[in-house]
Length: 372
Image 1 (cartoon, rainbow, N blue to C red):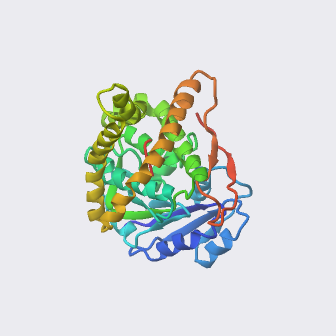
Image 2: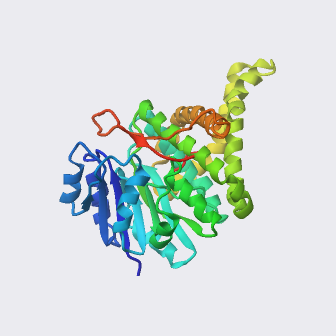
Image 3: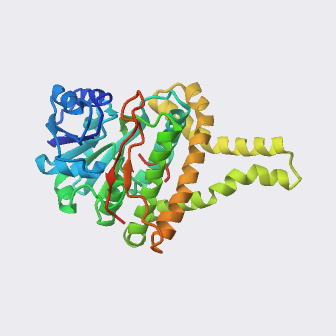
């Protein structure tokens, strides 16, 4: 029987934290302990956590990143497993029940389920919802079959505590600790597992301001991990290296795909409307089948899922801009000592739904795709 401690890093999360803690209380397999790291909040985060029965840890100062907040709590964990949950993520009641059996295999170091968006009100939330449904019902199952998942999502991952401690805790050397740990463990010969039946609902950015902050961090973190790990991936985990290289190729060739209708029209053989129609139709043929499967798999209204597809073009455009920025900065300028790279951890969401200005929470020491 596995025992579980939950770590919830939280900075100004009084609005979203209750739903997260209530979802933990509703688990069919209850965690043994819940630790909320109230990381220099200026609102009632600590009081809300205590009112829901969590143990509240208050560092003497703002720790500067999610990984550091998690590491602050790690010494207080005595169970064999640790569940890391973001303070704006709601777990399905059977989340732990579905994920814990993965750890019956002693080779498993980390496991996580499917991530979906909690809300689909704005263009950016709807576009992200489409990306999640596509990624978690196309890319992730294929990676799982190859025993090479790209990432165990940091908003809802379960870790084997002894190995996490032996590794030195949640990695602080890159801006995205979840991908860093997932790759590191697979390089070391351990397993990372995707559990498709376990569902977590994450609160995603509501507007462009915060969406671009999150995407900037994710893309920079991906490239930081490429710089740090790719050589060893090729030697020790070649299938995972294939997925990473395919992601890089996708980033490099995406501008050509976006330019295709213009190139066809410029060639003179196709009218601009026909070129755009051909391009959109081809893209839809590639996108729609996994989304139809995802809708049926998750019991979602098919019409709504398909209606969100146009929103994904807006999120894809932002992804592309920051992916190229990350390629240039993290994989070219940083190795040439012409730039430092991204070191500041910024939240991809306002502190409250009322739009309080986000706080840049310090610097992280250290050296694509849709991640979650």
